[in-house]
Amino acid sequence: MSVADTIERAVDLAPLHAFVTDFGALLDTASHEHEILASGSALLERLIARDDWLPDAFAEPDPARYQQYLLHCDSRARFSVVSFVWGPGQQTPVHDHRVWGLVGVLRGSERVQRYATATDGTIEPVGAPALLVQGSVDAVSPRIGDIHRVANGQDDGVSVSIHVYGANIGAVARATYGDDGTEKPFISGYANRVLPNFWERSAAS
Image 1 (cartoon, rainbow, N blue to C red):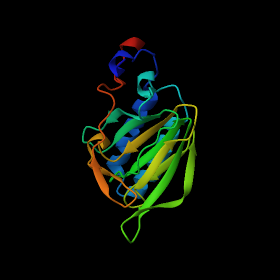
Image 2 (image 1 turned 90 degrees about the horizontal axis):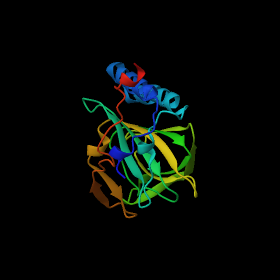
Image 3 (image 1 turned 120 degrees about the vertical axis):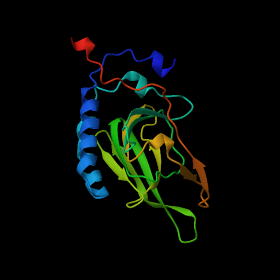
């Protein structure tokens, strides 16, 4: 069943609407990345503190691979908001983003292993994997560290996280990495073809 066929559960999209409005206002005034990440983290923490606003269709796992659903893209592509849905045992390859990003865990948990390019050009892990639990927010960017692998932190359940990126992330040319540092270009795209309609008001009238 497609996303278009499964938006059936009535949810209150006001938290998402408020988040994208507030994040747009932040970008109107913030002049440095560290300000965006710090203030944006607080906004994302507030959004993921409640779990009653994400439609079921945008939290739907796929048995074959993790899913990336677009929830909102700024009209100037200054930022995008996506939900990542992880089935049991699913993980990304080692990859980069090439823009700043924030990751907030809405349900379940995620295991994150950061990587860096060694002097010989290979990719090596940086520290031990970190476990992000519900309510946690993490940040990435080329400035602070942009290469990682993310996995579902639950062996027998579904995890959902909300990501915010400094571009239309589904259209950004990025790369996955082999152990030898070899880059494989990719553009992720999105799993959905429709967006949550948080402009609808007729049901409340």
